[in-house]
Length: 93
Image (cartoon, rainbow, N blue to C red; front, side):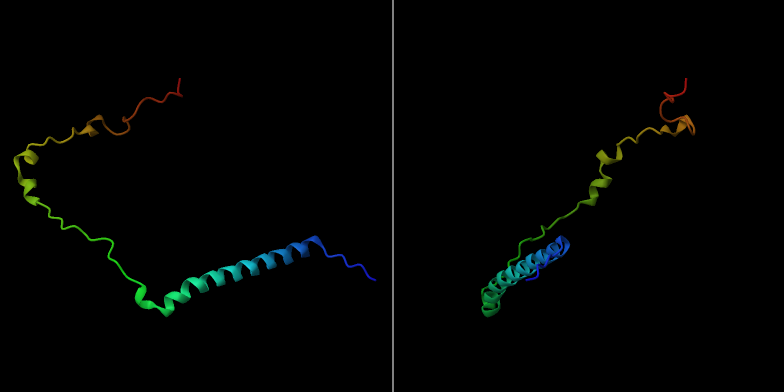
């Protein structure tokens, strides 16, 4: 009798193929049992509207009100000149 040695690489390939086939079969069986009843009885599937958009009304007349007209602008900080912004470099002695 001849003794046949199968390399570990070949064993790993066969194992992965076997696991892949079993996984595909399990997924096919589960999808068969989930999809098949829905195909036989399409009237049981109901579609419900989940989101209903609220009616939003924006009052743009508020922009002309006195409260908005009397708002103050932020001060202009560009008067320092270019390159002066920030603090001094702490790494220069």
